[in-house]
Image (tube, rainbow, N blue to C red; front, side, top):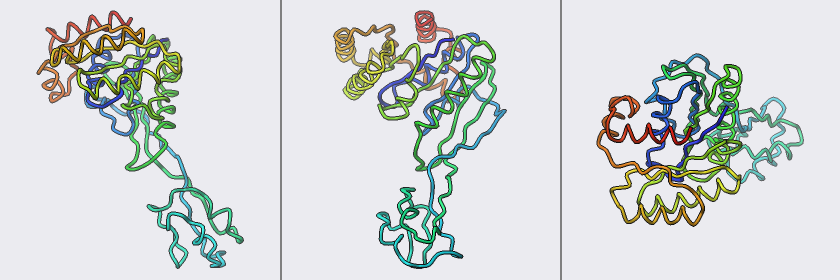
Length: 282
């Protein structure tokens, strides 16, 4: 079983469009959407949810008024002004630092675990799909990424699948690190813009730090051939192969509007290029 993660360093480069196309082209696989902060792969693979699980992470303080001595120590140490003068905790302001529970002489502070989101095991026409939804302004998205990856790997092992195809999050932070850990290939999708070049270099360094085999795809390369050439030179210096140059195509946005993976929406042009790209990846 091989794990392949599609990452980008920045949003909007086309990694989800590519991942959905790989889901259509690959046989015997499970798909994972690790962009838990803003998941969107489900819009193209149209899952039917089979299992729904709560994701719990972090804590919020609550004061038990029956045993509270109203000494005020919790109010004085709270750096976030989350405790009012009548000894009630504002759940929005509470950052879960737990200091109030340490200083309370009566043990009146109760730390309650937060429900921070949900994760799902679904079925699609392309095979099993594991995805998640992090709550608004919730943290620990890296932990949720690890959770959905573990679930997908378990499905792949149980059903003896050949591939785990991962739609990774943008950026270089904790969710990206959790998406990269232990994969067999990182496919960086970039675009010929200054921000695309800059963020590609940043995420490439993260991938190299974890010794992950890495390849690059330049999407919409024909919009700025000069920058595309600069990206190829950057990759050459970093000893990374550019394995595909994908042209700009209006069919991409049309396929997204229809909610259909690009390689199914059209069999010509860019769809053929993506099919060749998948063959190279295999």
